[in-house]
Image 1 (cartoon, rainbow, N blue to C red):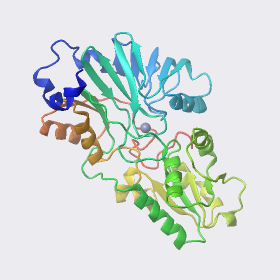
Image 2: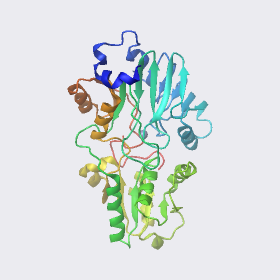
Image 3: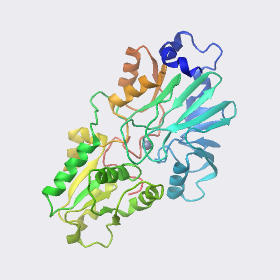
Image 4: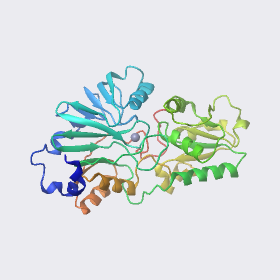
Amino acid sequence: MRRSSLRVMGKHRRDTPYINDMRPQDILMPVAAGLCCKPGGFHIDPVRPVERAVITHGHSDHARPGHGAVLATQETLDMMRLRYGDNFAGSTQAIAYGERIKLGDVTIQFHPAGHVLGSAQIAVSCKDTCIVASGDYKDAPDPTCAPFEPVPCDVFITEATFGLPVFRHGNAADEIRKLLASVALFPERAHLVGAYSLGKAQRVIALLRAAGYDAPIYLHGAMEKITRYYQSRGVALGDLRLVKGVKKADLAGTITLAPPSATSDIWTRRFPDPVTAFASGWMRVRARARQGGIELPLVISDHADWDGLTATIDSTGAGEVWVTHGQEDALVHWCKTRGLAARPLDLVGYGEEDEGDTVPLGEDAEA
Ligand SMILES: [Zn+2]
């Protein structure tokens, strides 16, 4: 691919379609197990056991156990090991951001996706055609992971979890200010913040620290391993303590992070008159917060919102867009109005662990 001319060429490429190149659908195609790269002999984020898996990030709907060989970032491999045990795959290989590896007839390269620690977009190149499978991503700042990097490509594969114009997440720091204002207003109550265990919880903690909150932050036991892992990779999260064993009265005026499902069960009885918060992009929808019994909805998402999705598609210069899980229709339509070729991929099996879940208080994998 001629990268220097890509910005100019990108949107017009489909007028001179892949004369000497592979057709994109010969490089990557959706099958029951996920996205299959036949010329490379691997699947990306397979939902069924395969011989060779290349994995974008550690959320359980993308990173599943039981594959023959797994290629992923060191962080993603470590998270899989923490979650599934040492024998989660036949063999593993770590790849760094920017590193190129040849697999069969294709070359792959990982780039930061800004979604959670270790999350990656996977660029698959074959002859002069480059396809980027972005996994889950966000373009908003996040102190706990490397920032999203736009990758010039011919075909961009995007998620669409929040693929409707109504979804605009706003500034996460403003939501954290709301939480801190509530803590100041109710010093006799505990604040329980529901957040997914991998990524969201650590981001909320880091945002609290960035806002100057330096008191101990408490954790549900299910969050401990992954949060300590973040700290071991150099993510500064301050003084963290387990809730277990702390007297009820001593939790007044404190903040505790817990898996979403724990904030609505019997576990909450150990807290004095808890204020229940939930950090999710879905909290933009008031009805969802009400249904979930959420007193303090915090619109904080690890997925791109509508503006993020469309700006990212623009920035890749891709002439063709494939839309995976989420709300595909509006985004496909938007692409077409911009003169881009676009289609939904109809992949199934994603959106079960993190916010892709359409039920905000669904069972958390680690709860
Ligand atoms: Zn994810």
